[in-house]
Amino acid sequence: MTTKLRHWWQEMRSSFWFLPAVVVIIAVGLAVSLITLDINSGLHADEKWPLIFGSGADGARGLLSSVAGSMITVAGVVFSITIVALALTSSQYTSRVLRNFMRDWINQLVLGVFLGIFAYCLVVLRTIRGGDEGAFVPSFAVLGGLVLAFVGIAFLIFFIHHISMSIQASNIIATAAEETITAVDRLFPKGLGEEGEKDDDGNYEISLAQRTWSAVPAQRTGYIESIDGDALLDLARELGTVLRMERSIGEFVVDGYPLVSVAGAVEFNEQSIIKLNSIYVIGNQRSVQQDAGFGIRQIVDIAMKALSPGINDSTTAVMCIDYLAAIMTRLAAREISSPYRLDEGELRLIARGPSFESLLAETFDQIRQNAEGNAAILTRQLSALEIIAAKTTSARRRQALLQQAETIAKIAKRSIPTQQDCEDLNALMRKLSVVLKGQAGGPDLKSEECAT
Image (cartoon, rainbow, N blue to C red):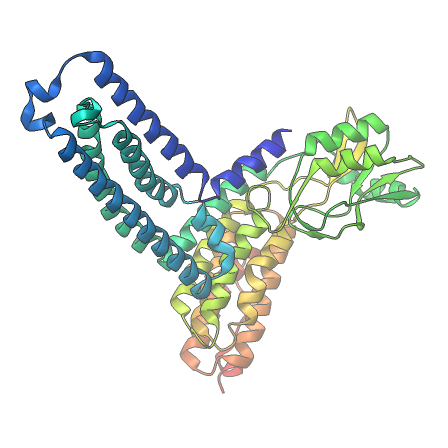
């Protein structure tokens, strides 16, 4: 239930209607409150302070009508600017970051403020009476409409500044990286039960290979956005068996395809299948909350678009590599838990998730493959590997970093034509070799080998 509520809240945050609707309700409540104050206070503010409150029924109607008309017009302009910004972001960078842009609470708040002021004016206008109708002008509410008009002007200026900043490449990449780093801090290490000892992993594999497995199918097609790990472990405990995840967070699952496998001859009826599927949140797209790899994917996509022949923006690609290095540096010092989850010493769940090696490949592979001949990108990737290597003492992770460096070296050998670029790459390789191996030497790019 907690996972479902969290997913629902994230969906609300990503919508353009939730926060504006809340602001409109607050504005209507403010209008009703001020009208009630005018009715019950008996202050006769329009008589005591005529310069501030004494606008009369016609003047009050004119003021509120002007404010209401202006605010709904500006709201339309704000909405149009937002749609243009979304289209520009999608075409210039990647459509994967649109959800981050839509989740920006400032854009939602600005739209809500203009709609809220419009709703406020409508509510107050309805109560104004003059002449034979029985004169009534809610002075405090009319003054509130004037104040809100100036608030709207301030929000419009602020929105123009904010939108011009938010569509810049540096801010888009930084926002995606910050969200991904937050996900890394939350997810790693994160267990679905007690962690199995890594030394026993081989014993588990031998034991589990001898068991028979029954598949439980998915009941929906889409991407796995989140999983309630505690509920999955509780279900395994309730059944008294071992569950094996066949698809992890971020992967695509097809209706009827195995979602989880159950060890042994455990009968799964329709009710049990529905219960297991309810543990998974399956949607139309991936989300970062439990899927740090998707955050990496967003930044890699921006780099790929920047490196495309039609754009050829190496500076943006270099910025992407810098932020990817920051993410992997945070991850390099974190423990990614064993897939074997125990409950009171007994194996209950075989989880499926990312490894450091898979996330490292996600970070470097496609950018490297599209950077052939681009010395700036290859150089920055080697620098990123050096930064990441300094944060981990794991021999396995250092080996993965070394393999990435050697692959970059091979691409540089066959694609970098100038001697100076090769010498710069050689120097970086030697520095990286010292960090990875703890000694000088190691893989080296000789300038005469990569110069043509």
